[in-house]
Image (tube, rainbow, N blue to C red):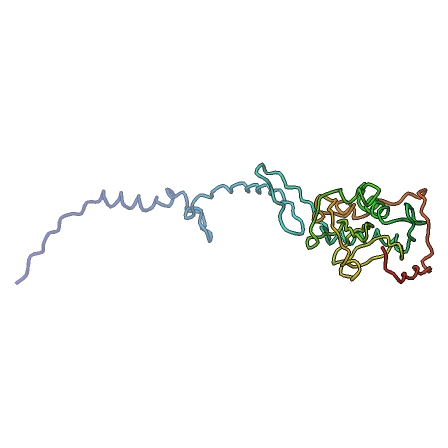
Length: 257
């Protein structure tokens, strides 16, 4: 038995023609057809941001003044404090050294009653000359008046620069204490010498002491706060030179001032 052929419905031609036209023209409609993409396609990267201007460096802070001990201290108003270096040696120890140095020029000066020079000097004249030369201090001339100057001080509390007095049979004697039990004075038998308070003769006849300086413990050597130098001696100032080779006269058999 032969089957009858099935009739198919005709396909629409117009839609096929429109699709073919669109497919043939899409290349012309693509604006990027001839663009060859590189390693970093422009269309795949975000827009470049503008480079910010380099920031200016902050101004350097002013250097803090320093010294060997560290930063300079400032007061409440911010001003640097003024510092004064303390002298290497000051106080009673410095005063002792200062008096010993000044007294060295007088050692060996002969004793002469009423004398006031390097040719001869007595005890009160020597204390007056030494303290004037070393400290600029003016004392009265005699032992009787010097014992009333300043203020009294106990023997155990003596400091350099104090006047030490001795008395024997109504005779008075005075010297300048140097510290460590020593004093310098013009002895009637040996001239200007350094003796000790614990020597038998001076220990027995010790009388009193007077402090003629305000506070020997606060003494500062002349020139210590400037250049550490003492004022030079004027070249026209008379200064007699004593022969250093001459030995002091021998002590008398009977001890005396």
